[in-house]
Amino acid sequence: MSAALLRKGLELLEKTGRGADPPGRRAGLSGRPKRSGKAPRRRKVALGLDGGNATVKGRVTKSAIDEYRKNKAVNHLKKNLQYMMNTRFVANKAITQQVLTHNQGRKSKDRPPEKPKKKSESTVFTEEDFQKFEKEYFGKA
Image 1 (cartoon, rainbow, N blue to C red):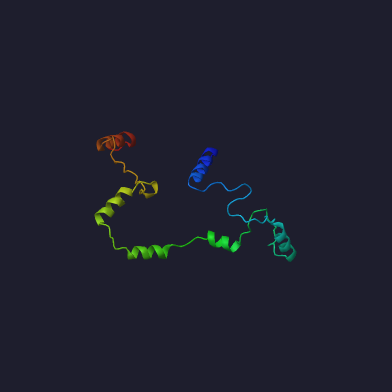
Image 2 (spheres, rainbow, N blue to C red; image 1 turned 30 degrees about the vertical axis):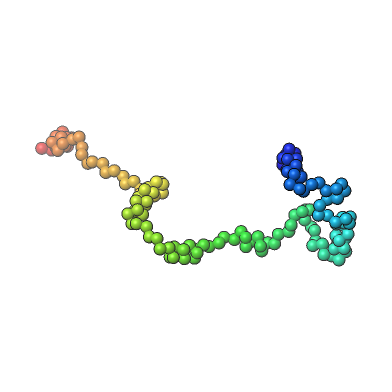
């Protein structure tokens, strides 16, 4: 928050009746001095209840079993089948067919393999040309 917003908020609080506390006192705190957190810590360490801090400060040791369970793949087949079986809505066959035809053939894996085109078996030469060639080449009458 910016300082201007903070000042504005404090001004609004003062106007509503929550004035500033007398100097040296803050709201919600008792008059006794605050204890340092080191004494209870010393007792824990002496008793061996510190939890074995062999990690970086502030880092929590994670259980390997919990991590495995969290990252384990979940099979939703039963739930999905149950949901589908309990659904009463059935789509119109014409609409489902329209959706299927619209999505069909969009990907290369969905396309059937192309059949090679048959070349026509026509030639430039006629039967008379072949007979003439036989006469000239082989010498047959």
